[in-house]
Image (cartoon, rainbow, N blue to C red):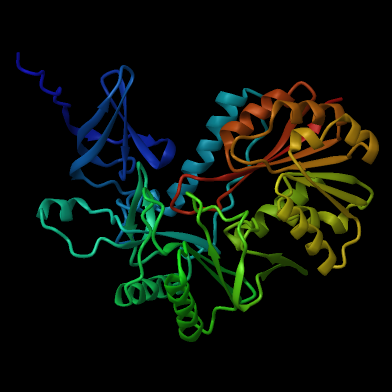
Length: 474
């Protein structure tokens, strides 16, 4: 008996893209189905090749453009459409901001279903290229081949790559020649390392086999003009140690602008290095960021908002929403390295910060110390375990809680404790409006949303931050 042939998925012709959707895609409607399409914008008229078909929706790619939308702009990156990042490069920035504002409104109304004030206009980023202060790139001996390269059906001599992981292919790396997310220094150093490694026979990492000298690299710059560069190796023997030492010396000699040159010898099966020893080749193991009259120490393991300029705008909104007079006890939940806690401390009686990562809390304490701040306290541990009734009874009921949780939002136990603490105000900073909306609904019985301020931290992506002020109901 002959095998059943795979069902041919349809080609949809002359389809008008209607609106922006989730995950950087746009949306069209065909009959009773929603169609999600990447790398198109509302107003484009296209032919779509369906890639996945479900009962209520389809996923497709544009294979022909009949008409270009007036909202469209020319992407500026040569890796656009392959890299997977910066998916909204083809959409004018003012339209990106409208879409993000609408995304927050839709989430808070459809998921939160709480009474809302009029939203403030989104704060756009003044810098829409080169806005990141941190980038990470991976090495692989399995380079991702583009469609054009695959069609050539030839054997490529060089399959080593340094760049970004391809979504859905965990061991494949797209070789990146230029990235516009950071100052051009990231391109100059990364491309120099590739050239040096290939010329000197350094082995690129094989993720499946967990072998190979070159694993990953991280670059951080700061508004103080400092530059941190870290290379992750997997060093097996004296020969590879000598190769690693020679590469680090080459970087020190070639790029004098690097003020903090570091490396890690990581033998784990993943690139996380929070538990690894940091080796200092040049300078110190930290750099500084400045915000108003404050300095923040940022190490290789530290979390710091990746858009420095917009982080300042975000924190100003949080401080303004808190409305501090100098007499308040403030709890700063998910404090990270204490950036918000220290930023608002001058206008508070005391600020208590809580964070899961012990190293971040140590940074937070140092940041208070170097800025002469004496009215902060910091505690490390799981939020739902530390923030409980006993903690509040010991430290006092907060007048204001500022919370900036991860994308998953707040645990139910944390919300229950916040309700028990009963602060007058809650300032909720979120990088995920969907989980923020869910949490607002859980707080709605006791708190009313009185202000909403979206902030764009990541131009050309679908990601957006949102700050909400909740005030205790009478």
